[in-house]
Length: 260
Ligand code: ADP
Ligand code: MG
Image (tube, rainbow, N blue to C red; front, side, top):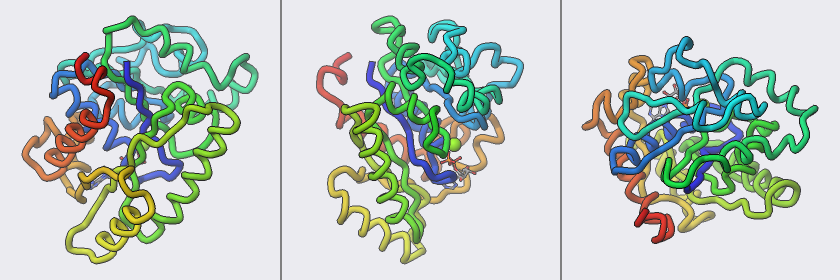
């Protein structure tokens, strides 16, 4: 199973939107996908229409060891897409985990229990902070998919992120690497977007996906209907962009994984 963490310590950059829609696009491409919602806000769960009463088991239970991954994963309305939802308990986990043994390994231990072939790819939607939750995500999924918002502070955020990756590499996981950076909320009519995109590409080169996610109101409306944009309006520019991102993602994966 391929594991990717959708991570950026900044909030509001499009992590959850990317996690939901990339997961849906990969599922639409025939992949069996597991999405782990590791943000206490539970936006990925809500955005996929998982009501609070359906969240009997959650990513919190994975971290505490109360539940296994197969038990905690529930189907979504999207064929081939399962989710381990998040509950508010998770906000306490940052503090509670401190007392656990192997506190940075908890999610990794749970994900390692997934039976071979059950899912082809596991995406983890990270919270916007570098606490124990995100570290658990990065230990379980050393390949980072980083959404970067096309805004004035993008490069600053980027250098902070690269520092974070180095720190995690030294302390927790030598295997960590950036799988790809995806530019989000790109506004064609705004020169700044174009400039930021060019600057980021100059710094990161091939790490940046060719696909750029446009600013598209359909992407922000879809979650209130409990649907991925790809189902809410599969022809909107945002949905098309996430399908293109899925194609690029698949092309970047090792051949062996693609054949699976
Ligand atoms: P994060 O998970 O990084 O905090 P979100 O994915 O929740 O970010 O996005 C933050 C806000 O911006 C949400 O309201 C979301 O609907 C909106 N949003 C995200 N991506 C886009 C986009 N490409 N176009 C328009 N709105 C977007
Ligand atoms: Mg989020």
